[in-house]
Length: 133
Image 1 (tube, helix red, strand yellow):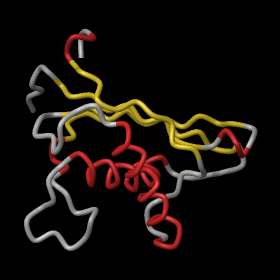
Image 2 (cartoon, helix red, strand yellow):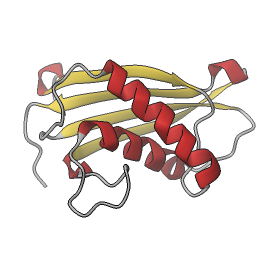
Image 3 (cartoon, one colour):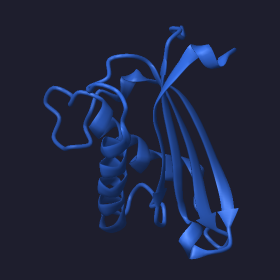
Image 4 (cartoon, helix red, strand yellow):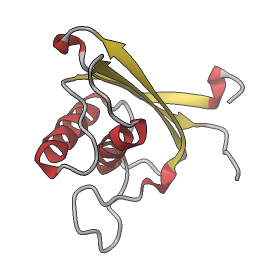
């Protein structure tokens, strides 16, 4: 995007806790619920959204954690989608939403030294200028 006028921020939060990865339901499901609740509580827009959005995720991880960025993204995107978007027709779970509205993703990892600093910074913006493929 070329300017700040191309997006309108609807969520900007820091979710505390150890970010969980895709694949281990024991830890993934509770993490999704925490993220979804935080997004729901801080959303400044009428829901569900039916506009293109950008999601910026910054994962704050303990230095010794060796996890793949793409595996960290999936649970957060599922949780965000469960709050912001309509449920997919025939969807089998809370997480099965029409997240095709996510048009841009920025994801980063930041290493921290204290467990109390772990979490994920989430900024979600509605794109005001349509992105084309």
